[in-house]
Length: 267
Image (cartoon, rainbow, N blue to C red; front, top):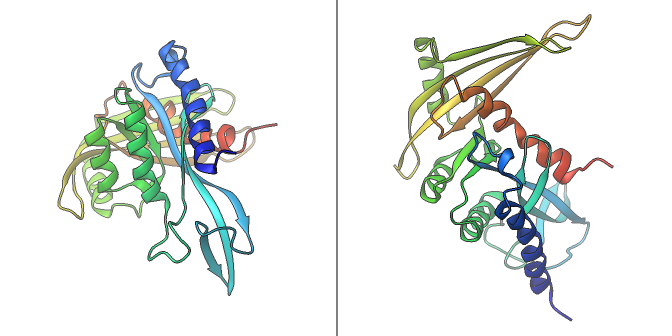
């Protein structure tokens, strides 16, 4: 009877091989961002939770005196604007033993997963879609080293120096804006603005050049007050009037696909 590591390896080869076939046969060509980049969402999800220790690799969380033992995973899924989500690789987040000095976590698992992804698809042009947990120098440097693009959700409290530069420079570049007038039944309006060439120095003193893209989306439902939602990403794309909308609508905002079609598929 094969062990669990062997089963994992076999399942990975099968799942990844299926997507590899779709790519090789150019089935997914029309779904590429800007006609070039395959979109890969990386996100974590829970798998198993126990009230008692299940194995030496369990992660633990203690709240109100109650310890929970759990097994999360980090998933890389190739997603498309048409709503498809294909599993590429899975990285298990687990401790090396029962009493580790530091627990495993999503960030550590991300670096392992990224190395495996680069090894398996060394020449594939990828754009990673990530949440704010991954906004930082290690991710920027990894993507630069691997030749990947990225669109990472940026909250106001993330990377204060980058946010400060965006707030200061955006009003000085009024041409770096695009307005999409209201359309559709909800009279959806979008206003984009961006700042390129923002310098960022990480904690290891490595220098990065990033851009910030912001989208204000206003919906006007019938007989209701307008509702405006703000979306913002940090990226290594150079943003312009032609690609601002595709980067937002056909790129950054597709992180929802991993939740709706990947982790919680409709029945």
